[in-house]
Amino acid sequence: MLARRLQGIPPTIFSEMSALAVRTGSVNLGQGFPDVDGPPTVITRAVEALGSGHNQYAPGIGVPALREAIARHQARHYRIDLDPDRQVCVTTGCTEGVAAALLGLVDEGDEVVVLEPYYDSYAAMIQVAGGVRRPVTLRSPDFRLDVDELRAAMGPRTRFILLNSPHNPTGTVLDRDELQTVADLAIEHNLVVITDEVYEHLVFDAHEHVPLATLPGMFERTLTLSSAGKSYSFTGWKVGWASGPAELVSAVLAAKQWLTFTSGAPLQPAIAHALDDEPDFPAELAADLQKRRDLLCSGLADVGLDVRVPEGTYFALADVSHLGWEDGLSFCLALPERAGVVAIPTQGFHDTDAGRHLVRWAFCKEASVIEDGLRRLGDARLRA
Image (tube, rainbow, N blue to C red; front, top):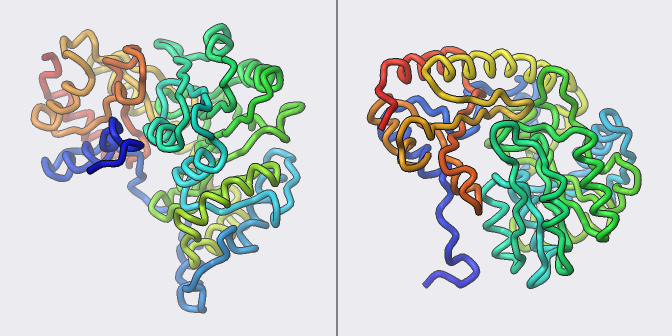
């Protein structure tokens, strides 16, 4: 009975592996949700909103206070000036932002270039929208953007690039040269770029997140998506946004009105408070995550895994090909019984075989949880 537009799209691996973690009592180093909530003042503001009449439909485009706070955020961090009434739209998390952007912009047969591995909702929603996916692979071990592959992906029916940086699951933060290549090709081929920047503040060491919209000639052709879930550790609130030229934002709103129509009314003033009054929290979170990244990556290396230290996000990839497993999925399905740990195989995020033996590990957990997981891995037989 499944509609053709959904046929061939498997259930999201995140639900499967998180359910496996609960069922087996395993340490969940798979799905990317933090163990600790964000700033208490933001929770207090949500409670205040619940008690002061913010419980009915919010405007479909989002409450003015949040749209204005998003505009201030973009101006403060990136010097991007936005009209909050025309160039900002609140979404139910970035996942809905991606869905609404693709449904609102992509016509049947339009080609959408994506970086591979990709977040699984990209592939699903491109298919639902009737688009054609054109992957460009970030290849192990360094996971950098190959300029020649990107150029080769462009064809006469290419209309969009769906770009994610900082990149999940590789942890790559595209540098200015890579972004300039994207910009040059977008301008040359008259493309619209949809950017998923949910990890914008979670970058490490000397790396820098540069929004594509800030490059010359790109604001007018870039739809920027982000959310508070990752930067403020409120993943369950599902409050995100789209910003950019009014005609692109209006396309998102045109689709969103038939998806959720509106998003959690009492949570929107709270996220406005987070953006305006807790501006230092994301940087503090990133500094703490860097320590947990180092803890996880050194521990995975100690148990014999070939791990790549990420530049951003809160995920690290490890190659398990040397352990003798058929693929990463078979490794991850055996891991709860062998070690009492859950991780995420990434082959479902690829069209090619490049991710067959890559496994994603999350370090947004408390240090004690990471240490427990590493102890379990160290005591287990990881070879097939």
